[in-house]
Length: 334
Image (tube, rainbow, N blue to C red; front, side, top):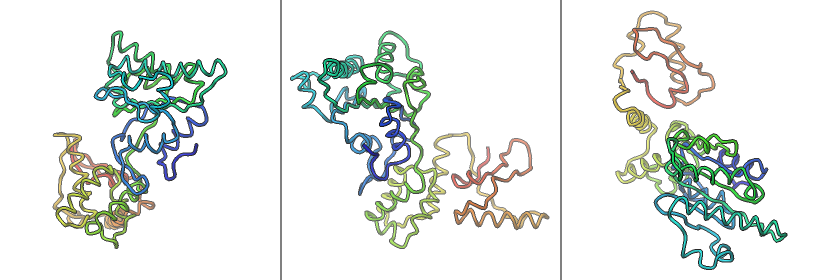
């Protein structure tokens, strides 16, 4: 079962690990609540996992603390096991996880007596760090940890086409025996690449041609947006469309500044300099070199840029700028 066409790198790696038999349990963390381009639509990553990445699985369970256990696909196959199963799906965490385990053991028993069903079964646990927090303790926490570890390390689950995906915002907020256990494969979902941003822009351009005109260089615009999530891009595009404004690369400089201020409230001060290099005496060759690099940076041509510049000055002032940092945010002072 190949990965969907155009699958992001993290999804392709997950496919390879499962199809090769190397792993059946995956911890997805990082940018897990973003959106991405799938076909002609922007969809949530969780939707993409359920309907694209796991499209070939006949039975798909989902669990989160708010909704309890749900069966997204394969209810008729579960009814072959227990006819009234859809009327008794549990909400309680321990009962829900045990329910999935019992179904797996049922498939294992069929296999053991020579009547394998060959079902592909997957279970997605949303908010896994809320279900099994890193600082959790007590009987129920230990019981859940034991059951979920078993999915990735013990028969019959390791002998079946059985995949468990645990989604966590922050890896270190999840129970360490799950997050860093040998049975788990870590899958970090990064912020979108330039190509992923361009794919999103292509879809948004079709929907909002007045905000992203046909003449727009989408590759350059995507490159100026590195460090921005697709959800944020979509929100900004809709706001600009409502105001009947054209989306500009300068919008993302302001947006990145706001993102940094939001992530580090009271810790970062942005400074709009009123000086230019003309205000500084001497080092004419160095200033000419620096101007050339700034021009390359503004064109997003980073191949010829140095790793960074180290500027001398008073203590307790940030003076080191790297070319990778230039792409992500304007200069700031701590």
